[in-house]
Image (tube, rainbow over all chains, first blue to last red; front, side):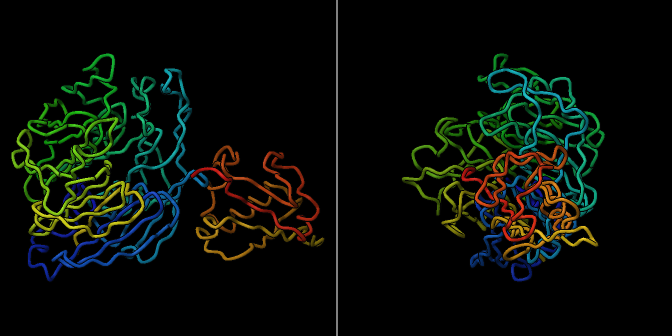
Length: 395
Length: 106
């Protein structure tokens, strides 16, 4: 997932002015969640030489590992597995030490049902936390997006969690259906200028927006068109894969849908397609350059049944025009025999003067570009399948 | 059994992932009040190691997680009632109560 300093949609954890003073004065910490543990990759501002540490939480699935923009030492990890369920880990020293915090994610009241794959009602069942979104101002405030789809919030640094049930109690919720990966709330975007405004994305229900800190919600999917559902422009039911926002322009949202790259200029009230000249508009992550709000990144994937890049060539596509016109970025990326995927939370940006872009693959590679995507090099090649990548820009 | 305190020392063997999570090595020895049952052993375990709450049984329903098993004395006790007495060998501390990650789950 594209992020700015560990939080894809929010201001930097250190002011950009500070981080621009010089590469020698700053560094980056790349937080990588994989199928079998977490890894922390660190470098100075040049981003040429890397230290790789890990695995943390070895053997567990780390769906997300992220840092607080308000306190770069505060990290959160979603640790889960089929045997022993959900654990949330917290570090207060930048990942040197960790402690398990609260892991009780209980739906508020009687949770009711959503649709199962066969169309029958299915009780809401907590499976895991897909995504953690710390506040930009309060290191103890963090949101958690869960499967089955629900939004939880902690105001005590993850020690306890309360559901914001208005989302799951939306009138449309009994009709929500899981995508292939489960019915997950995977994306949480908080408006940095108005923390009461939240956008979330659910596979396969679509985007929902709250303007009252999560009490009430409404679907914001107007303009989406999905061939895979009976009513292609329905209010809900769209398989939205990821959202991205530049913190300086919170009314502009970018979306990678199952198919289609979309843009909204009115905080999700309406969407229009900006796939333009992409070779394929299927994909998972989408993100925005740290300093250029109209520079957007996607990783086109052949199709929903071929979860690998077209022609065996791993290419990031960049638009400098806010969509529609895209250029392939290939230098340093494998251009033959490459059949990996890049998952929705596995791309991020740093906020150094020359914006760094990072992504991880299902083949275990983490690639970095220190020049906004012009050239790439692997930081590490042989990790377990990468589920998430976040970046912290450090003083 | 300590008659005065009505407590029993129960030996518990945790699977690797839960030992790591709880920061323990080897067997755990627990003082269990009253009769040794699955419930009383797990209650004592979660009091001593609160980070294990929710990893073996559901926070609310207390149902065993699907891929967790409880073994002792070469028997699978997973389907016994939670308040059923554990075998004497476990209650007297001569055999451990084993929490096992089932051979499933990837």
